[in-house]
Image 1 (cartoon, one colour):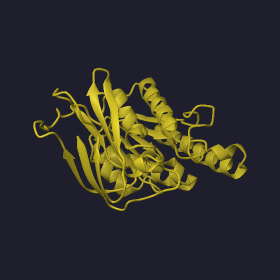
Image 2 (cartoon, rainbow, N blue to C red):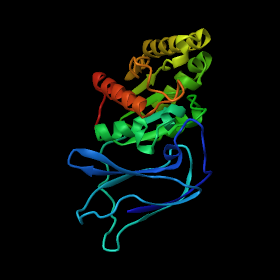
Image 3 (cartoon, one colour):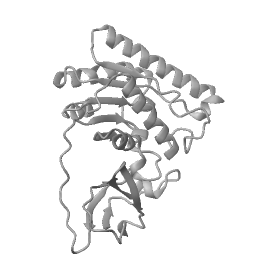
Length: 277
Protein backbone atom coordinates (compact mmCIF):
# COMPACT_ATOMS: atom_id res chain seq x y z
CA UNK A 1 0.00 0.00 0.00
CA UNK A 2 1.41 3.35 -1.06
CA UNK A 3 0.22 6.88 -0.42
CA UNK A 4 0.90 9.98 -2.46
CA UNK A 5 -0.07 13.34 -1.00
CA UNK A 6 0.50 17.00 -1.67
CA UNK A 7 0.71 19.48 1.19
CA UNK A 8 -0.80 22.94 1.33
CA UNK A 9 2.12 24.72 3.01
CA UNK A 10 4.92 22.26 3.92
CA UNK A 11 4.95 23.65 7.48
CA UNK A 12 7.94 23.31 9.80
CA UNK A 13 7.97 23.96 13.56
CA UNK A 14 10.79 23.84 16.09
CA UNK A 15 8.91 21.81 18.70
CA UNK A 16 6.96 19.22 16.69
CA UNK A 17 8.09 16.28 14.55
CA UNK A 18 7.44 16.66 10.84
CA UNK A 19 5.73 13.25 10.87
CA UNK A 20 3.09 14.76 13.17
CA UNK A 21 2.85 18.06 11.33
CA UNK A 22 2.45 16.62 7.83
CA UNK A 23 2.82 12.83 7.83
CA UNK A 24 0.14 10.16 7.41
CA UNK A 25 -0.47 7.22 9.78
CA UNK A 26 -1.77 3.81 8.75
CA UNK A 27 -3.63 1.47 11.13
CA UNK A 28 -5.48 -1.76 10.52
CA UNK A 29 -8.16 -3.54 12.52
CA UNK A 30 -6.68 -6.69 14.02
CA UNK A 31 -8.09 -9.25 16.43
CA UNK A 32 -7.40 -6.97 19.40
CA UNK A 33 -8.59 -3.71 17.83
CA UNK A 34 -6.80 -1.04 15.85
CA UNK A 35 -3.06 -1.63 15.38
CA UNK A 36 -0.47 0.85 14.13
CA UNK A 37 1.41 -0.17 10.97
CA UNK A 38 3.55 2.70 9.70
CA UNK A 39 3.86 6.44 9.16
CA UNK A 40 4.31 7.98 5.73
CA UNK A 41 7.18 10.38 6.29
CA UNK A 42 7.11 13.68 4.41
CA UNK A 43 10.07 14.94 2.39
CA UNK A 44 8.60 18.06 0.80
CA UNK A 45 5.41 19.51 -0.54
CA UNK A 46 4.78 16.46 -2.76
CA UNK A 47 5.30 13.03 -1.22
CA UNK A 48 5.18 9.34 -2.16
CA UNK A 49 5.63 6.65 0.49
CA UNK A 50 5.36 2.85 0.63
CA UNK A 51 3.50 2.07 3.86
CA UNK A 52 3.38 -1.74 3.76
CA UNK A 53 4.03 -4.59 1.32
CA UNK A 54 4.22 -8.41 1.17
CA UNK A 55 0.80 -8.86 2.75
CA UNK A 56 -1.42 -11.93 2.47
CA UNK A 57 -4.62 -11.56 0.45
CA UNK A 58 -6.92 -11.35 3.50
CA UNK A 59 -9.55 -8.65 3.56
CA UNK A 60 -8.70 -5.96 6.14
CA UNK A 61 -10.11 -2.70 7.40
CA UNK A 62 -7.64 0.20 7.39
CA UNK A 63 -7.67 3.65 8.90
CA UNK A 64 -5.53 6.59 7.76
CA UNK A 65 -4.86 9.68 9.85
CA UNK A 66 -3.98 12.79 7.87
CA UNK A 67 -1.52 15.57 8.88
CA UNK A 68 -2.24 17.45 12.12
CA UNK A 69 -0.74 20.85 11.28
CA UNK A 70 -0.75 21.14 7.49
CA UNK A 71 -3.42 20.92 4.83
CA UNK A 72 -3.62 18.19 2.19
CA UNK A 73 -4.53 19.42 -1.28
CA UNK A 74 -4.58 15.94 -2.84
CA UNK A 75 -4.14 12.33 -1.77
CA UNK A 76 -3.90 9.04 -3.68
CA UNK A 77 -3.77 5.52 -2.25
CA UNK A 78 -2.05 2.86 -4.34
CA UNK A 79 -2.61 -0.88 -3.95
CA UNK A 80 -1.58 -4.12 -5.66
CA UNK A 81 -3.14 -4.63 -9.09
CA UNK A 82 -5.01 -7.72 -7.85
CA UNK A 83 -6.37 -6.01 -4.74
CA UNK A 84 -9.40 -3.77 -4.35
CA UNK A 85 -10.66 -1.01 -2.04
CA UNK A 86 -14.23 -0.84 -0.76
CA UNK A 87 -16.00 1.31 1.81
CA UNK A 88 -16.12 -0.01 5.38
CA UNK A 89 -19.40 -0.46 7.15
CA UNK A 90 -20.84 2.88 8.20
CA UNK A 91 -20.35 3.65 11.89
CA UNK A 92 -23.74 3.26 13.55
CA UNK A 93 -23.03 5.19 16.75
CA UNK A 94 -22.97 8.96 17.00
CA UNK A 95 -19.57 10.67 17.37
CA UNK A 96 -17.91 12.47 20.27
CA UNK A 97 -17.16 16.07 19.26
CA UNK A 98 -14.07 17.80 20.65
CA UNK A 99 -13.68 21.59 20.42
CA UNK A 100 -10.50 23.25 21.64
CA UNK A 101 -7.06 24.71 21.07
CA UNK A 102 -3.70 23.68 19.63
CA UNK A 103 -3.55 20.81 22.10
CA UNK A 104 -6.86 19.50 20.78
CA UNK A 105 -5.52 19.94 17.24
CA UNK A 106 -2.65 17.61 18.12
CA UNK A 107 0.28 19.75 19.25
CA UNK A 108 2.79 18.22 19.56
CA UNK A 109 2.14 14.53 18.78
CA UNK A 110 4.94 12.78 16.90
CA UNK A 111 2.47 11.34 14.39
CA UNK A 112 -1.18 11.96 13.44
CA UNK A 113 -2.73 8.95 15.18
CA UNK A 114 -1.44 10.03 18.59
CA UNK A 115 -3.72 13.01 19.31
CA UNK A 116 -5.98 12.19 22.27
CA UNK A 117 -9.24 12.28 20.31
CA UNK A 118 -7.89 9.60 17.95
CA UNK A 119 -6.56 7.47 20.81
CA UNK A 120 -9.96 7.68 22.53
CA UNK A 121 -11.69 6.78 19.27
CA UNK A 122 -9.62 3.60 18.93
CA UNK A 123 -9.91 2.65 22.61
CA UNK A 124 -13.67 3.18 22.87
CA UNK A 125 -14.65 2.17 19.35
CA UNK A 126 -16.43 5.50 18.80
CA UNK A 127 -15.86 8.04 16.05
CA UNK A 128 -14.38 11.30 17.34
CA UNK A 129 -14.56 14.59 15.44
CA UNK A 130 -11.78 17.04 16.27
CA UNK A 131 -12.31 20.80 16.08
CA UNK A 132 -8.93 21.90 17.43
CA UNK A 133 -7.66 25.34 16.40
CA UNK A 134 -4.06 26.35 17.02
CA UNK A 135 -3.90 29.82 18.59
CA UNK A 136 -7.67 29.93 18.77
CA UNK A 137 -10.60 27.92 20.06
CA UNK A 138 -12.32 30.46 22.28
CA UNK A 139 -15.90 29.17 22.29
CA UNK A 140 -16.76 31.42 19.36
CA UNK A 141 -20.37 31.53 18.21
CA UNK A 142 -19.67 30.55 14.56
CA UNK A 143 -17.85 27.40 15.69
CA UNK A 144 -20.60 26.67 18.22
CA UNK A 145 -23.11 26.87 15.34
CA UNK A 146 -20.93 24.52 13.30
CA UNK A 147 -20.51 21.83 15.95
CA UNK A 148 -24.18 22.06 16.97
CA UNK A 149 -24.99 20.82 13.47
CA UNK A 150 -23.52 17.43 14.45
CA UNK A 151 -25.73 14.90 16.21
CA UNK A 152 -23.13 13.96 18.83
CA UNK A 153 -23.00 11.46 21.68
CA UNK A 154 -21.63 14.41 23.64
CA UNK A 155 -19.50 17.53 23.23
CA UNK A 156 -16.13 18.06 24.93
CA UNK A 157 -15.26 21.76 25.25
CA UNK A 158 -11.56 22.18 26.07
CA UNK A 159 -10.92 25.79 25.08
CA UNK A 160 -9.71 27.31 28.35
CA UNK A 161 -5.98 27.43 27.52
CA UNK A 162 -6.52 30.14 24.88
CA UNK A 163 -9.10 32.17 26.83
CA UNK A 164 -9.05 34.87 29.50
CA UNK A 165 -11.30 34.61 32.57
CA UNK A 166 -13.53 37.30 31.02
CA UNK A 167 -13.87 35.30 27.78
CA UNK A 168 -14.71 32.15 29.72
CA UNK A 169 -17.41 34.07 31.58
CA UNK A 170 -18.81 35.70 28.44
CA UNK A 171 -18.66 32.82 25.96
CA UNK A 172 -19.55 29.66 27.91
CA UNK A 173 -23.26 30.41 28.30
CA UNK A 174 -23.88 31.45 24.67
CA UNK A 175 -22.01 28.37 23.41
CA UNK A 176 -24.21 26.12 25.53
CA UNK A 177 -27.38 27.93 24.42
CA UNK A 178 -26.47 27.47 20.75
CA UNK A 179 -25.96 23.72 21.26
CA UNK A 180 -29.16 23.44 23.29
CA UNK A 181 -31.27 24.96 20.49
CA UNK A 182 -30.61 21.83 18.41
CA UNK A 183 -29.76 19.30 21.10
CA UNK A 184 -31.74 19.95 24.29
CA UNK A 185 -30.40 16.95 26.20
CA UNK A 186 -27.04 16.00 24.65
CA UNK A 187 -24.30 16.04 27.33
CA UNK A 188 -21.84 18.94 27.18
CA UNK A 189 -18.56 18.61 29.08
CA UNK A 190 -16.48 21.65 30.02
CA UNK A 191 -12.78 21.01 30.70
CA UNK A 192 -10.53 23.45 32.55
CA UNK A 193 -6.92 24.59 32.01
CA UNK A 194 -4.02 22.20 32.51
CA UNK A 195 -1.16 23.15 34.81
CA UNK A 196 1.82 24.41 32.78
CA UNK A 197 5.20 23.12 33.93
CA UNK A 198 6.85 26.50 34.45
CA UNK A 199 4.08 27.49 36.86
CA UNK A 200 5.95 25.57 39.57
CA UNK A 201 8.38 28.54 39.60
CA UNK A 202 6.61 31.26 37.58
CA UNK A 203 4.12 32.87 39.94
CA UNK A 204 2.42 34.94 37.23
CA UNK A 205 1.71 31.82 35.17
CA UNK A 206 0.25 30.00 38.17
CA UNK A 207 -1.88 33.04 39.03
CA UNK A 208 -3.23 33.17 35.46
CA UNK A 209 -4.10 29.45 35.45
CA UNK A 210 -5.73 29.67 38.88
CA UNK A 211 -7.89 32.63 37.81
CA UNK A 212 -9.06 30.84 34.68
CA UNK A 213 -9.83 27.61 36.49
CA UNK A 214 -11.71 29.45 39.23
CA UNK A 215 -13.79 31.12 36.53
CA UNK A 216 -14.41 27.76 34.82
CA UNK A 217 -15.89 26.30 38.00
CA UNK A 218 -17.83 29.48 38.77
CA UNK A 219 -19.41 29.57 35.30
CA UNK A 220 -20.21 25.85 35.43
CA UNK A 221 -21.98 26.22 38.79
CA UNK A 222 -23.86 29.25 37.43
CA UNK A 223 -25.07 27.32 34.38
CA UNK A 224 -26.04 24.31 36.48
CA UNK A 225 -27.87 26.46 39.03
CA UNK A 226 -29.74 28.15 36.17
CA UNK A 227 -31.33 24.78 35.43
CA UNK A 228 -29.19 23.42 32.62
CA UNK A 229 -29.21 19.62 32.59
CA UNK A 230 -26.65 17.17 31.28
CA UNK A 231 -23.70 19.51 31.65
CA UNK A 232 -20.51 18.28 33.29
CA UNK A 233 -17.17 19.66 34.46
CA UNK A 234 -13.83 17.83 34.27
CA UNK A 235 -10.83 19.07 36.22
CA UNK A 236 -7.81 18.00 34.17
CA UNK A 237 -5.11 19.61 36.31
CA UNK A 238 -3.76 16.17 37.28
CA UNK A 239 -4.39 14.44 33.95
CA UNK A 240 -0.72 14.16 32.90
CA UNK A 241 0.67 12.37 35.93
CA UNK A 242 3.07 13.67 38.55
CA UNK A 243 6.50 13.19 36.93
CA UNK A 244 6.34 16.38 34.79
CA UNK A 245 7.55 14.49 31.69
CA UNK A 246 4.48 14.64 29.43
CA UNK A 247 5.08 17.81 27.38
CA UNK A 248 7.50 19.04 24.73
CA UNK A 249 7.59 22.67 25.90
CA UNK A 250 5.80 22.70 29.22
CA UNK A 251 2.41 23.12 27.51
CA UNK A 252 1.96 21.00 24.37
CA UNK A 253 1.85 17.26 24.80
CA UNK A 254 4.22 14.54 23.71
CA UNK A 255 2.87 11.11 22.77
CA UNK A 256 3.24 10.16 26.44
CA UNK A 257 1.14 13.18 27.39
CA UNK A 258 -1.55 12.39 24.84
CA UNK A 259 -1.75 8.76 26.00
CA UNK A 260 -2.13 9.86 29.61
CA UNK A 261 -4.67 12.54 28.73
CA UNK A 262 -6.69 10.12 26.58
CA UNK A 263 -6.76 7.52 29.34
CA UNK A 264 -7.72 10.20 31.88
CA UNK A 265 -10.62 11.50 29.77
CA UNK A 266 -11.89 8.04 28.86
CA UNK A 267 -11.91 7.18 32.56
CA UNK A 268 -13.82 10.37 33.40
CA UNK A 269 -16.38 9.68 30.64
CA UNK A 270 -17.07 6.31 32.23
CA UNK A 271 -17.21 7.77 35.76
CA UNK A 272 -19.77 10.35 34.63
CA UNK A 273 -21.88 7.66 33.02
CA UNK A 274 -21.72 9.28 29.59
CA UNK A 275 -23.02 7.31 26.59
CA UNK A 276 -20.15 5.62 24.76
CA UNK A 277 -22.09 3.97 21.94
